[in-house]
Length: 306
Image 1 (cartoon, rainbow, N blue to C red):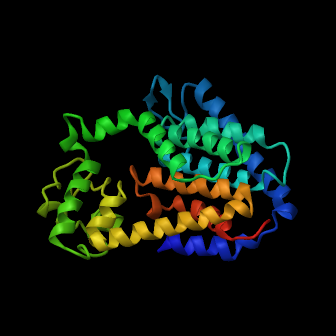
Image 2: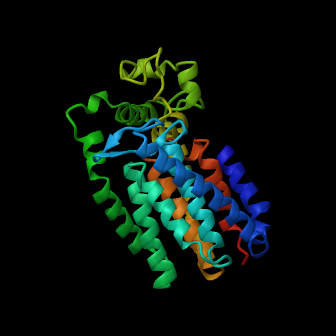
């Protein structure tokens, strides 16, 4: 529930924030954070590496002191979205938007590449061409995302080692759990969620995925590494349908912002699309890092010009 509660807080409390009045203060704090990131980036790379990292596409991935690359990527998304809301009210922030996009890309994650390109395309469509994001553009963005992430898609679904990938194993198992526990699933905390690993749900054994790396009883580190398997496994196909309906409703509400504030509209679309992308590779809407993104989305959904 934390995502939806945070969404409400973002709308009802921060949605009324006067960004003309407080925009410069907010930007000052963001600039301070970005300069710290810039300094750390150069120290990390010039020193040969003081922070954890791996090599992807022949480059060191940026993680800094965060527990995972995806956490730093989501922080960049949050700051980009917040700067976008304020952009019309505060001048000379394009440099910092570019830096954040470059830092996002430096995580070397496929979803980060896709998010950066989507931001550029959405910026061009909404703020330059003055276009509203309709189904045609959504399909275009999806196709671009598939093209960019094709290597990861091939790895997860068409690799000879597919059976060893926990994310795919949970997806396949969730489909059968949804059938066996039709229509409401196996219940909360039983599959692909954090607590299902803490108490170690018998479903991992019942559906023969308890042997996979990250899903074993003594090392359940990857049990919450997927989102849609959790929805299907714990809430069944009825829960899946309801969740999709909610997402469609949110998208329709974001669409209404276009005629009120194009900067809020762009920020809301960007955050929404990133969460959809992230949901394919992580716990997304239930991950703690999604809470700042829910705040941004809540601010954008408050239908008033700021």
